[in-house]
Length: 191
Image (cartoon, rainbow, N blue to C red; front, side, top):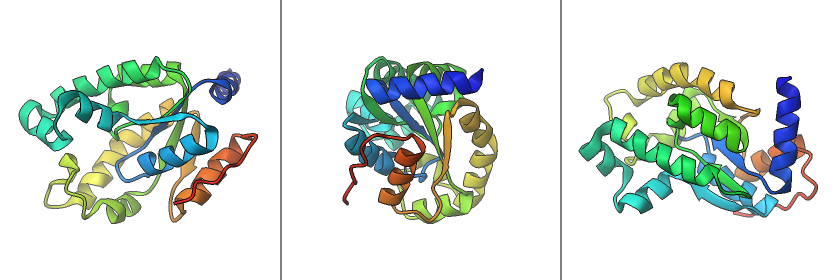
């Protein structure tokens, strides 16, 4: 039954529906999302950027003032608004799947693609990024490993498709996704 629902969701997404990208920070959701949106002729959104635009401050500032719980409330509000749209590709924040409500919003609102990478690959991609509040710790790799252990099952639970992002260019990863989805035209995403 789950496969039938996934196929229906894919057909809806291919018509005028939505693709939602989930995964840990550094998995490539924003970069791949932009490329996927271009290739599928859909509008691209990043939920973290929407939260920042709505508040007028960067996410680390939200964490400093309101804590993670305050940020997560704002994230849910943004996801609810974005998932109600049609014809979008959405890159979600890495922790969006923590909330059962968010998982329901994503699952009901579009076709969910989990961009999966190992904690070591994620660390290599994020180690110099100071805009990741959850990685501002003495051992960011250990933190990523911990987050992976907690969130990987949640990403799998909500995902309609799981794609390994290890050691692939954005273009080849997007082409892989389009091929899996049997997307009719394969516009390339030039960087």
